[in-house]
Image (cartoon, rainbow, N blue to C red; front, side, top):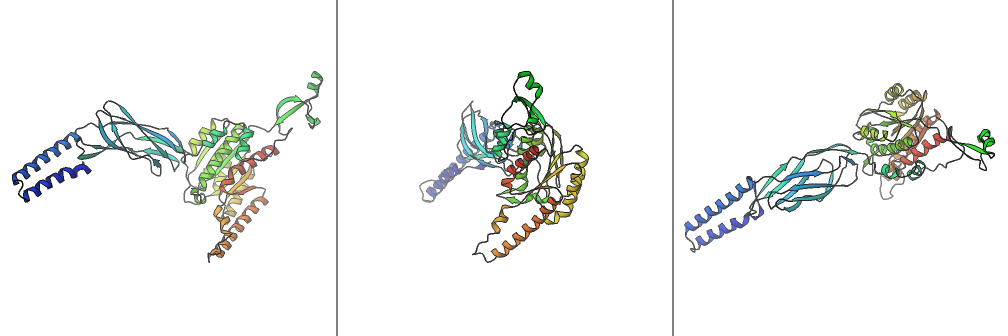
Amino acid sequence: MRPAPAMWLPALLWAGCGLAVNLGYLLPLAWWLAGAGLAVLLGIDAWRLVVRASPQVRRLLPEVWALAIEREVVLEIDGYRRQALEVFDHLPPHWQQQGLPRRLTLQAGQCSRLRYRATPQRRGAARFAGVDLRLFSGLRLWTQLRHTPPRQQVRVYPDFMPLTRLALHSAERASQLIGAHIQRRRGEGTDFHQMRDYRVGDSLRHVDWKATSRVRRLISREYQDEKNQQLVLLLDTGQRMLARDDGRNHFDDVLNASLLLAWLALRQGDAVAMAAHGGEQRWVAGKRGPGHLDTLLRACHDLHPQPVATDYLAAASELSVRQRRRSLVVVLTNIRDEDSDELLAAVQLLKQRHLVCVASLHETALQAMLAPDRNNPHGGIHAAAAAHYLAQRAQVHDALRRHGVDVLDVTPQALPSALVNHYLAIKRAGRL
């Protein structure tokens, strides 16, 4: 219970009575009687506020949110009587909101709706703690803060909005929207797709002579890329992925690109598995079908990088035990020159059974450092340090390529299209 801003009115009135007594216009008894009357009035007003029942509050919001995507939250407030109040909702930490706090007037027997916008800034489980209501007394002389208990748990997933938009298109069109530039070529693939009329340019090896003799015109067999292959996404959750670009750490970019690649692979009929190593460790066994994407989302939505060193060899050893069937293993990390020996040992272990691709992110700020500002006296030193660092990274990448490992050295922004292009190129070439 706290005095409201309107409390200055009775205080000013009593002070005016005191001034009138000092000037001889009123007797001292009148000042005391005025004070007693105001005290009784304040007490009654406060008591009526204390015994007043709290309005009932319900929060309407989705259980699943997408990272950094703004959505609407609705608060329904039932009023037992006409009254004014202020409302503030306790959002999870690191969330942003627009439209709070809000003042409104409840009508007796009616339900009032308050809408505001919220934006999650961190993946994982999030908890709305409750709603604060600031009630005003009948005379607006007192206020009381009450905490109502509609606590709710929600989950914040990676930004899956691009996946919902891509779901409206075919797999080939979706890959083009992501950034793939590989052209579809007829007659490739190893899985039989359909029979069709012969077209100029078709290979004679694909002509089905039995069907041709039956219908008395040339019939070709059309093949498609092999399905039911295996894709394993090996995510680094160690300290390397804490590097940041444009306010986001590299792991969030890696996770979004991995989910895009997983969605496309599932649409192509392949099975997708996911393994996290370094900090937090997770394993999702490979399965086929669009419904498996929900399993991947639930498994990784609360996954975050940790400030610990990544043991690449241990991750490769564990994956070799879990994934026995030959697969395309995509290692997503941020390579440093000191990782060279351990990473080489890990990929050599994986190459005994799998086809390995290492996608290494580099900070866009490094490219900016190579062109220093002439007005900065230390710009040349920074540029030389960045060039030396990039040269060491390039040596690690070259060593991996000499051992038969595909290496993608890309920025976070270019990662989705680079992964999709490489995956489709492997499918077209039949390397699995």
